[in-house]
Length: 367
Image (cartoon, rainbow, N blue to C red; front, top):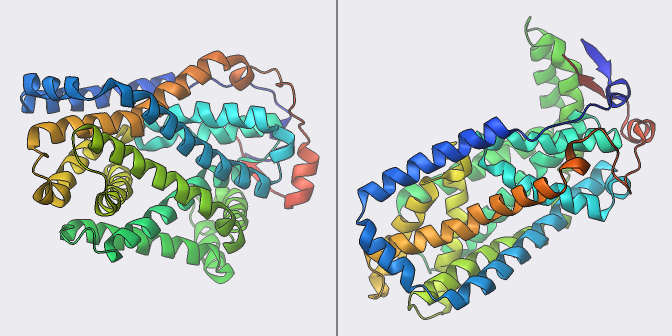
């Protein structure tokens, strides 16, 4: 049954953290890590982990927090495009963003749709306009990955990059370009909607899909991408600095070439993890980091052995992926009433009529 989103937003139904999805992701991740530990010399691995300077842990956590700040600015910009930034307020927006970091552990990051549900309850923003906000975060991050990995390759600091890595970059570039071209082509959108309307099982979602495509097209206009590109690029550079500091902790000297190599590694591994479909890229990204370190860095860095490469990959995986999960879960636990209860949090102004009037008539699918 199709209902206007103003009717849907009138229902104050509490939401719950998708515990089952998150637990499924954690269980899958733990099984993968256990298999990895059984495949290596665990004693030697623990020895190398123990040699990592503990004094670097706090700077690494602070550096990673700065990357979250950059990505929060991206989130804020897209909320502004959706017209609900002022309604949500900076404090509530930060809470929702930080709690959402834990959702990456769900298979395929499917639980991130929960952020759009919370936005709908808080502000009345239709799902087919809230989901494009979540999608736009992934798009701008992919765009930053492609730009910086291309820069690293062009700089000549990664001449040994394997062909599959280059092919992955080309595939991601082609997929992103095709998606953006579609969202900027009204004629292509009309053809898709006509095709959907003709399908017996999909015809009922045509109106909802039309709103989603329109919202995505608005969200991903060139001017909006340019507004968010700088903080997205800074976040990726911060990720590269995290890996650079970890490498330095294992005795490698910091230089420009190592920075570009780190930039290429942290750019490629999220793409590999995303294509794998595993929760938080568990195991796959660590294996990718280890493989690229051995391929790109080890030939010119004698101090880099297979044993400490495994330790580097695990530490990098913790700071790049699992720290955000733990931080997000902590924020979700502390602010669970604000996020998931039926009570409206202080500072949020819900005005579904204003949202609908500002974006045109949009429909939401219920049931």
